[in-house]
Length: 331
Ligand SMILES: [Mg+2]
Image 1 (cartoon, protein in one colour):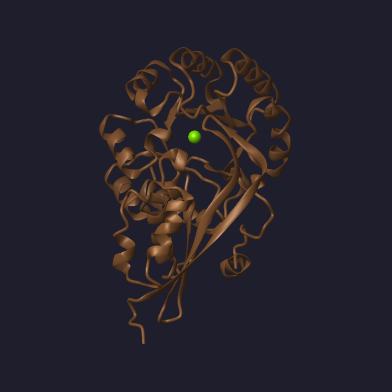
Image 2 (cartoon, helix red, strand yellow):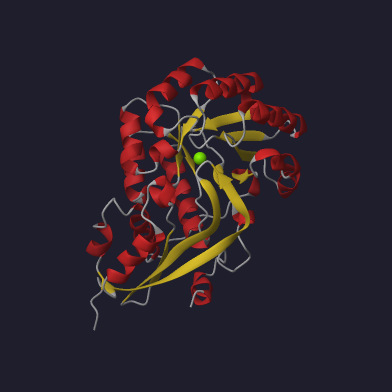
């Protein structure tokens, strides 16, 4: 018979083609691949977790995560789970979430649509896409920039701002793809638009952190770091190098959620929790983390979550809140 501390472990892969190809500075993305984890203990409790790699953000690949899962024994201990190396951040996240879910604590309720930022398609397609999302209740929109010449994109931005109702907020995400001159053009324009632009995300590549600091001093508009802070170690390093702007936290690729909470308790930061296109399991983990952060950082700005991504994914049952049913679909 198994002892109480022994956990039986199973995993299943998933593959979800996007409804439309996602264009970013890192290239086109056609399909979200990941792994669902299932832990069961001797008391019959079950905990699901999810591994959702994003290798162009520096995480392990799907193949590496799969190899890691295949090499694990079918029976694990908590030690196995909490000793996963930081070089496998999405595995670290997935296993910790599965372990925490064994405790069967009540989950946070799903977000109201208005508390969820909707991703617009890049380029001029944004102009014909925001209104359906607005009708669904979204009030914050994210638009990828740095995919066309700056003068062209600034013209699209003017059209978009002329169309968007005054209650709408826009996040601009450059994915590190601007040069310094373009970043100045964008930030000047953001300063003119004032509070209608919530922030500009990762204007310059991670290697140009000192220049981002200078931009942050020079302009009123807020700047968020994303690619610069994909792991918890990077997040800490940027905090200690003086970053007091916004941190986009893609929790599913950052590593251990409990260590993130610990850091935020010691060093309150301004956080936007953001999705990397998880199934309902990863999505719920992000909602729970956001609720924990809200309790921990009551003074911090309560930013809309970067989770309006479901309309990009197929209706394949992997957004089902019944995780046993979700698991069965993967068999
Ligand atoms: Mg981003």
